[in-house]
Image: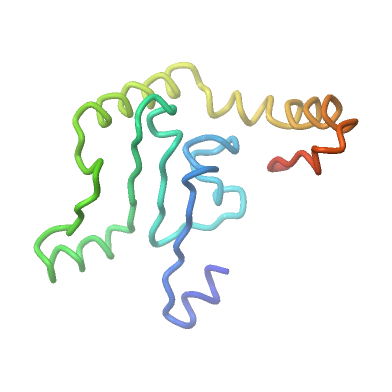
Length: 134
């Protein structure tokens, strides 16, 4: 995917709002595929659901281009730079690192998927149980 986008001068943009921030056993879900996006949207896991927080992360070269052309990043979202949200996000990220939670997800993730499938498979209302097989 990366090579095709590079060949056609197309940016790789990943939406990791639901699956990033360690939820797949790596900080970025696309790490499993060896893909480094140009632009990445992250959220949800950043502040652990305690308060809304999201971010857009870009490669340095793109950031430098935007800054040189615009002088700043033009945003105007409701939660932009909210100090409480940023403090919560920082605290959550410190706990994730301190308690090695990303590696815990990697170690326990498949067992959780298997156990959920086993527990819920008998219900017609549950179509399937999915997870990232690492």
